[in-house]
Image (cartoon, rainbow, N blue to C red; front, side, top):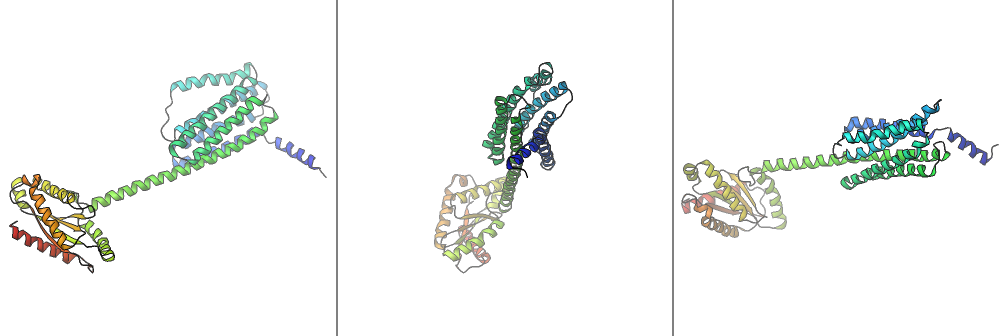
Length: 394
């Protein structure tokens, strides 16, 4: 029977059999593969950079975890693994920039990285493995911190919670490398084993943050698409319900509005009247000044009507040179309003430039509270408009 202390000792011994760098490298390979599959689905450049960064991380860890018979080969492999760790962190920096725009690589970047590669590849051979141990962890720490800050900057721009998680974990990984650089003497120190397992946990949490960022990006894209679709539908509806020449509502818009207005009219007993308007001697304008001038007159009259009625009232182009107004008032008030419109239009500067006799004829009718259909009322207003036209000689 084993004592508790002996069992704990055996468990610790068994845990050491698991190479922490090999474990971290395997986790990085799995993360890289999952992100690569996600890239084939989403086709976003930043996901490809993520996958590449994890692949480089896996190569770094597995090189450092390998067992080599010759000391020179082991030293060279460890130096290259340190360089790859720095390079992977730099790729994570680029991935944050790639979220919003395409990163631009310059030759100067390669010129700056090349001496670092040469040092980490050759220094262990000329000196010893310690020549790249502390510099490697320090540079990796700085690069990981830069990657974390880049994701924090992305968080400010996009409000992605995944960017927050990635930024925190990348900075935590940088902190772990910094701790190793200042508290561990050699790569074989047992403390490295414990820290590498902690770094592996940070790896997994960083990968979760990247998955969350991708999901949030998909959600944001869906929201943008929905907003664009709603805007397109609103524009299509506006085109369908608006007269293209005058900008007033057309008959289709009238059919949409009238049902709602009749319900409001019945429920709240709000008075409602119809004003039917025709432009006197409009044919004379077309015959003497041309159809383009006639179109300008229609636009002018439409603008005049919209300007001189309340925002709560509706102005429609009924067809040809005829307009219809739904106005919230009784019939006697509608008649007074029609007289006012005729007088103001006749005195306007626009009307003074038109042929003599061009004006407005208006017929009014009140909508009774029990009305279900206004077709007959529109016809009645039309007849009253023609009666007013005959009286004025229009």
